[in-house]
Image (cartoon, rainbow, N blue to C red; front, side, top):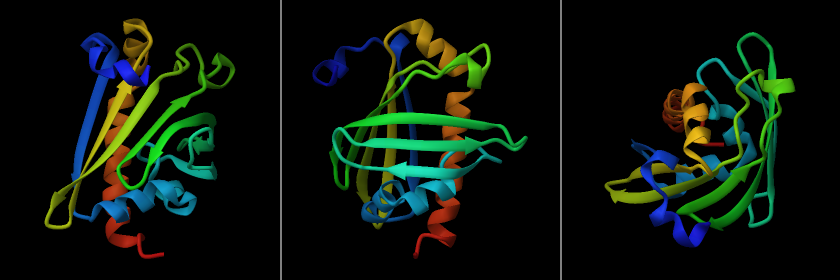
Length: 165
């Protein structure tokens, strides 16, 4: 699928973008270091008590997001491409309704691109590619865009307060 991403129709693609007042290498470290990733990943009110990260092609990312109500949402993903400090491509395993209820997130591809836009600033673009338009609709109904934007808010705060470790 990587070779033909430019041909994926809009009804199966979702783009989310954010700029950060931080250099690209630092933003990369926020993805590459499990400590930092656990501090900001997930929507507002969610924490990540478990983060296992093997950031290489074929490597695994396992994390457990804990919601404000204490409910846990385990997620497994596999890295397809890793090009420091600019690109990460991964695909999550399909979730089960036993954990996620009547609208479990389907498996879909994510491409994270970090662009140096000068003056110590970075543009982060997350492109999500879905196998079907129905899969995209299900993820949108789950609040994926809002959750990602809340994660990016948490990342911006972490970059100013906790990124020095």
